[in-house]
Image 1: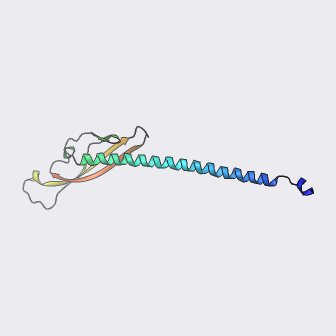
Image 2: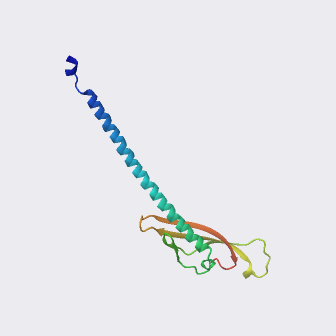
Image 3: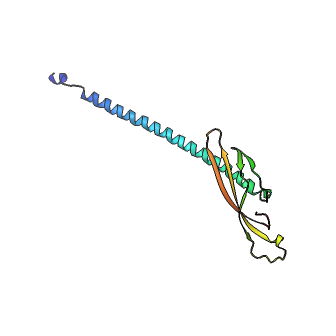
Length: 144
């Protein structure tokens, strides 16, 4: 009989402490998974914008009228929005090897161009700017 009255509830206090600790672990793991989900969503949005900008650059490269003496700023419509593509900038021009034509105006040149395109996503606020170089064999006089 004496042992029943001598218990002070240590088991209950210990169980409650473990319950609080396990609750803290559960709450912190939920918070971590939410943060990780947001990080993955942001990375996915950035990759989609990068792909749209790269697509705009590829469309611009495939249009030869952009590579002339008076290139202009162009816009390309993509699935993510309107991409601003800067005028191509001719960085270098080398006479193409292997040609022996007498008339210099028809000797091809290997011209190195740089393009830059930018897109800002209105929903997420993510911005992507991509610079890409391309070398094109053209007739002489297209690279200022």
